[in-house]
Image (cartoon, rainbow, N blue to C red; front, side, top):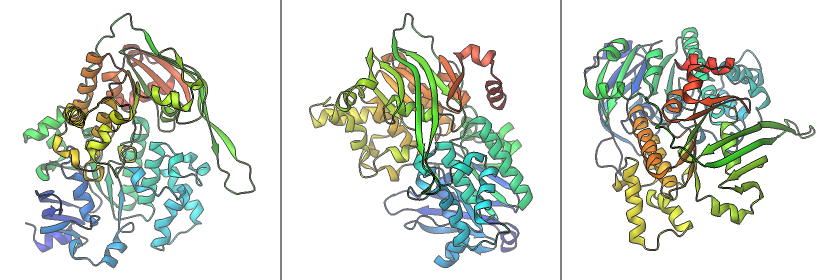
Length: 532
């Protein structure tokens, strides 16, 4: 227990905090205690469901049904748990900023980029020395989104995952808060941009004296950013202390397990001869950009430019590149979710010439796992309904008992308990939702999986388990993967062939060994330098 004088010296003090929810029997948080000084950085690390995000959201009391039977949260000497609603509103966004884990859930689909970033400025009447327009542009520049000048009128669905994340970061920094809570702030960013964002946060912290509560599953980021680490498991703090001491001499077995869970290894050799499953030739995608003013003509932006590659049966082709490089738009084009030009041949069938009904039949054989599980799962369906939906659509099972058996088997395959079958997506952590998305895709036993950042929201131990699962399934079922990621350690562990994209084009491609050993393009060398 901290004395009142000690609490006064700390910007943030959490002492013996317990948190419960009405629908959950066990406490979510169990005796959580730590403190953060002004201008310092503290990182919270743990697996999905360990209580990291719940601890962060409790600081702003973002869960209206949450109850706190024991403990306290002091910010600037005041107990947040006893604050009035008006006092909390004054804190949120002004004194305490928060970068949420999933940008799609944090952004209003009806608001533009400019409206999102300017909203906290207007809400708190934040004084500015320049116009709101210029201030917003400066913020976008600081968070590594210089092309935001042309995207101020864009809506969230028109941005890439990394671009949405940068808009959320700009929103949190808009009012120059005393405390910034960053919940996985670089999850959707490539390695080069991740390094830039982290350096920018450190620079802003140094300039303003801001404190940073950094929540992550990336030990490398935590080591780079934080002076103090807090390790959480199942709602408890199992170890905390100086970063250097914990990384070099971890005491708790759980901490040791986390440190040993970095993705490693190489893909299993491809069985030859391997027939070609997918051939993409000269594929291009353009989107129509809305003009800022109604009298101005709209423009067409080229997102994917003349891309060609092949995927063989049982092979993993990795696609890597920075946010906005066209990786996700390429996957959407392969699924015929966006208009495109060129040729896509899957199992000797030209997909671009198929009717909508014929295309639906083909989709059983190539499934997608999208980058953001929160927006790809129907919030009105239970987990069992989500995972089993494909079985009903394609009429694969004929009895309810058989369908239930397959759903439970698949949940166990991806490391989830069958007891969550009747729960809903909002009741699960980010990592659990991602595993549900993987189970939904795998239950149809497709021949090709398009995986768009499937492990970006997972902690290190779960990430290793999912990669091991994907490798085992590929070997057993001769599955082919088109694996999109900004994490080069994941790409290296799973991919036989690697494609590097920049500004919609393929700038380099080659085998796993050749690309990591002898990169040719300057951008590829830059990526590997940031990774290594």
